[in-house]
Length: 454
Image (cartoon, rainbow, N blue to C red; front, top):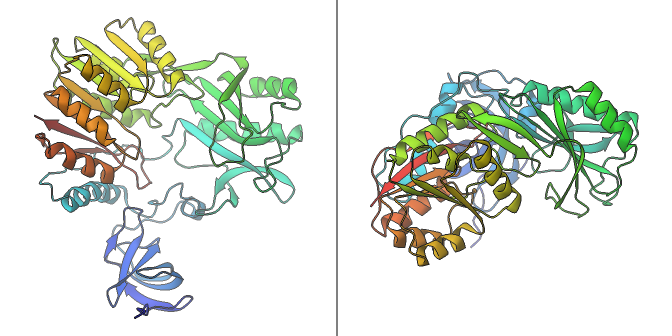
């Protein structure tokens, strides 16, 4: 028997918002049928219009707020919600921090894990924090534009001020856009896979103020290359590196394999926790330096290292956590799948005169299994995986090594809770409250640190 949804598309309904989803959408129920509504907050009474009806739930948009939440603030710009740049911009900052703490708690509770989550550590200035931008370039009304895609689409919304980015990066994007317009570069067309320029990437050192411009192109040839380089260098004195990344594929993937240095150095430099780091076009480097220092400092403290300890840093990137822990521990082993990142990590160790580290290129799960077979016995294992979390084989290898502590830096509460459950089934337990850190204010993402002990 087909269940009839109690709501119809394009109809309006008065509802009360009871909760927020992990994507920051308000939740209302009609006859126990959930409706997810953008720009709606718990405790609010709203009139909403149904935009889509699925088998077990529906989506809606707010037509009118009849009773406002005390946590609501005015939107800075509607475009930030439309594009998903700042989906929580309508929520007071202290309420954003509470939402993130609650998110993590919910995921642990779902796994029936008795874990306490501490209040989220926030920022004094929860905007203009990102040190990296990846901005699509498209043709709109006959003109080359930069901006961001409307959510769930590839329609570009032209934007000049991105709100959560370092303002100097926003300025640089506009300068580069205008130079590309001047030399009549053809923006990429996804449908036909034609055109030259796909994206502009800008990185800026938080402390060094050194800037890198990466022009991501479909073609090897960059028309008016000499003039473009000359104008960028003249207009933006902070630029120390201009790189062309070639991505000829018809793909959603941002970057191709090939980086060509057009001007300046292959890397820019910045400081984190008093250490110097060289950052290349393809490097993974945390986008919020202010909060990263808090996050890594906490991770090092919570690892409770002594001068005799051996540490493994799985997913070491360019060595940010490894090198900060190497200042305390006896020896640190880092592994990372991206060869360029390992090159950078080795360089970064050299720049900082740190000799008690060893970096390997490889899949974390495979390298840990090798080290385990070789009889390496770490006291502490640090994991900072991508959003998909840890492979089961990696968890097995860690458990076989029997470290005293596992420090889990996570960017996804759902995979964190799942992985912690697997560790607890093999004799590890969470011995202290989980600590969320707000790396991404105005968005729904949250980083956290969990410590597991034998």
